[in-house]
Length: 257
Ligand SMILES: NC(=O)c1ccc[n+]([C@@H]2O[C@H](COP(=O)([O-])OP(=O)(O)OC[C@H]3O[C@@H](n4cnc5c(N)ncnc54)[C@H](O)[C@@H]3O)[C@@H](O)[C@H]2O)c1
Image: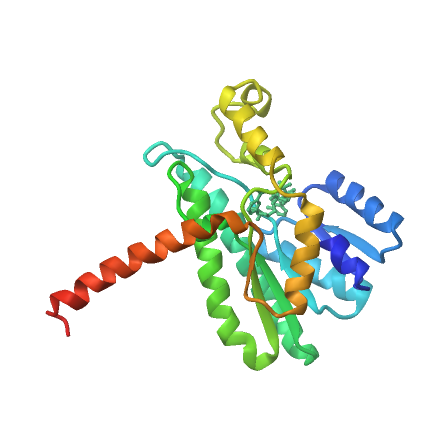
């Protein structure tokens, strides 16, 4: 996304908890002529997000586009997930987005020039699968949150989009091993059949640069939902059919009419 927006002339502030990854990303963007700065930031910490906002305004003066993209994977079965891991995922995947919104919306409002928020959810925010309930719950939350914000912020000329990809070729699989309570190290996990299978699935996912370009185009078109995987249409239809079937049940019953 940073590459795509830089190509369109935006100055870029990259914020991430991983200083090493930031340095690499900065060098890549700068080599293509982008005006880029970095700031280390844990999105789970609202004070750190505020510091990132301050650093952005000190360096660039104004902000027009905010991308709440940091996220981590957390899989596991109900009854077997450490509560501290649940909290960790919620603090990053949901509260990280909340912190970005609460810190940057007042800035966008005060500038009075409108703006755009992009919140990264997932296809997992529209279609639930077993075995990854914490991740799915946070991503459904980001979709609902973004829908609410879209209506609420339109009066401030702030447009809200929610990015909902299925598999994209990134390091997301490794993120799960940053959780506070681990039963297996990343090195050991890499030897397991499950990890290798997931690596194959993620590795066959979309190229992140293509997703970034599509996001920029969808932002130019003020889209709310940014979908990237046409093959998941049936999953969306199945969910809505299930909702309609149960809704029909209460209508047909008639007792609450
Ligand atoms: N890769 C996929 O298949 C996929 C699919 C759907 C949605 N997503 C979502 O895309 C977003 C980006 O993930 P990705 O796939 O690029 O994975 P990634 O692990 O390659 O990138 C995530 C980035 O977030 C950073 N991060 C993690 N915790 C942080 C924190 N507390 N504060 C600040 N930065 C933090 C990591 O250092 C990393 O640079 C996430 O929200 C993820 O849930 C990914």
